[in-house]
Amino acid sequence: MRVGYKQNELVERIKIAEMSATLTPSAVKPALSAEEPEKPLVILVHGFFRTRHDMAFLHRELELLGYAVMRVELPITRGTIADGVCALQQQLEQKQLQGKQLAFVAHSMGGLVVRAFVAHIHTTTSPTHASVRFNISHCVFIGTPHRGTPLANLALHVPGVARFFKALPCLRAQPEGKWAAPLLRPAEGQGVDTAINIGIIVASCASFLPGRLLIAEDNDGLVPQTSAITPDADAVILLPFSHIAIHKRNATSTAIARFLTCGQFDRDAEHIQHSAT
Image 1: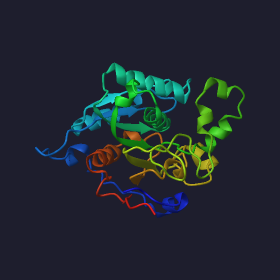
Image 2: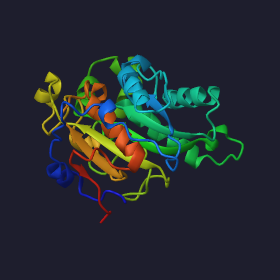
Image 3: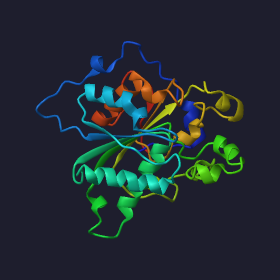
């Protein structure tokens, strides 16, 4: 089941999920059974101008939900997306994770690195390439700027910024149908063909002043909602948090766990899940 839509139409159809304050990971921890498949190892990927410590909240909450979790460190503040891909691959290989079932949960620009990494391992032609042995079952992208953000365009007008923050040009706002990183399901005449389950979590609270003042459309303070949503998603959910807070909320960890378990987001929240048109 794939999400089919015109992107602007989809954003108009999504309603903000009103998450109960009592909806905590311990309250919704699924019961284990003999028939339940083994959970994937969750790889947490941080965003721009952040480190692995920024994903500590999700690490703790997903462990409470019974998942084994690993955080990676990417050099994407000063480096490029390609640098991030290399660092991600090296850390996975050092942990000898080839062949093990993995699920990526990425915040912000970390999602662009994950997409580039997955596209890389699915398009390599070398049968000896170590990365082809990674078994990725799920990818969850949280506030990822798949079509960039107007704030990057403005920042790049500052002399020297692009030389200091080498990945920033990848965050330039893109027109509809253009993407800052590869789609992981063929759509709109582009993308690589994978069998990965893809979930999109979109933040809706534009509490960060630059987003409120400088982004004309609905946004999370840094990323337009239309940029966070892609046509290769299996499910999309909108949560009422800001870009810098959404990966530090119980409702988000609960939604992630639901998606990893059954391919849908929280049953108490409104989500988009239908066939492609």
